[in-house]
Length: 327
Image 1 (tube, rainbow, N blue to C red):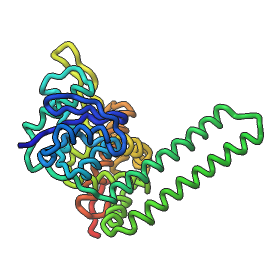
Image 2 (image 1 turned 45 degrees about the vertical axis):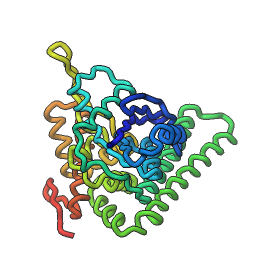
Image 3 (image 1 turned 30 degrees about the vertical axis):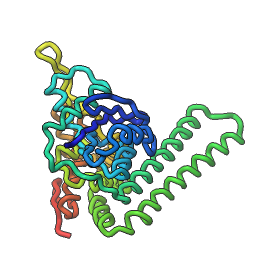
Image 4 (image 1 turned 120 degrees about the horizontal axis):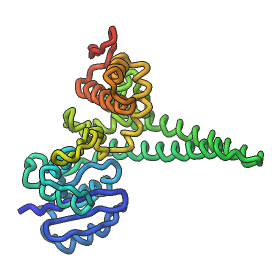
């Protein structure tokens, strides 16, 4: 007999529900509180437990690592399916508790084949940690740059030290990128081949290429709709009866780190990628706001990269269109 435990995963907390009780567990490495709960309540039935949760980037890593360590099966549910299921249930409010219970109820409609032991892919772990570190360093540098431009100090020593720190952080960013390429990607034949395929797409740079590579190898069996929702780029329409109708927007329920990394590559693709440029221009000509056209172009760029990755064929442009060329 299976014992399902669902989780709504947040940055600081996991809201857990097992059909009988609900708990808030601190989302920290090791998850000692969860370990104590399972050891106490499910002492002799750990092999029958199935964790159910949505993939939430780095926030769900502690839960996945715990499942690997305790040999617990998982059922990872696409955020788009959770959203649609919650909508079908008529949930008007959204709280961590409601989300955890909604995910728990989804166990009845999921395919048994979707339940499996989580893979402990060291490549995914290394790329995730390296990208996270890169983002932190880059954020620190941009904060100092903004501070320096808005609050220029009259003290020369202070100005010089801040400038030196900005330059040091930029060098550190470059070192992290070089380490990702040399120590992770180029040492793995599959990663190296896939990474170079993704880089054939105009607009995609090294960091965005690494980010997409991480997403694709982490969720190998996803289709177009699923990969879109994993980045939170799937559309959500807010409406209720005939009295409340809101504008369509993206869900933002997926991996926010990779979604934000794709912003500047999309801007670059609008300038240098014929297919994305024509797509963006067509949307503007139809009266779409620039922000809407940009987000749609981001989604288009993601799907092109996913198609290149899945097909194993390089991207090639020709006469304002694109084809997949034979390698």
